[in-house]
Length: 277
Image (tube, rainbow, N blue to C red):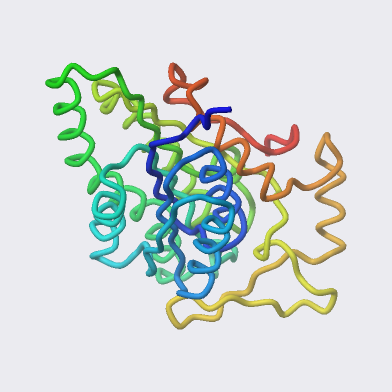
């Protein structure tokens, strides 16, 4: 049985852990070469090794998506290692929450940078590569290749969420970025879509009963996790009655990377078990 993404190369930001890892594994299982990214070397290499163990092809591009040189390195790794670029998944991110009157400029800027500025930079860096490849393919009379961009938003971006004015604003901006680029890049046979996640169980939502979970980002300890009692309440408000898994989240992204979605562009799909915010 032929693999649907054989011969394609994907870059997936934030793919060392959680949803990003599940996306990378899914794309690789369907035949894509994958450039894996994480802030930390260990998780990135673990995902690469998992892909290779399954017979796939992957390399790591370690670093923060907010670094000034990251976008060029990320795109360049795909070209240098695999000879091209066909799928871009902008997934990296985290939350740093508080109500607006307590939110600092640092909190606002950090979240806008990782969720909106970083995808913008990655897509900007990819444009010359995609444009040149498409021109060469058309000049050679090759069959049409539909490339894919999937940006990750959230129900916080489609409907807002109290305590997340920075995150909600960034994720709403991702939707605007998606819809605009769908119009700009259609001439390259690139589809640009967005998946807005609802409640997905990852290390950013899970918390021990006593609380206190943190992640370290750029030297900052950021509180993460949802109180187990609150998490149970949130799940009751989901029509399917539960949070989603990283694998289910990855499935919604894969749909928009598959050949079956070649005429779907400029759309926002909510992966939230029926919960729309």
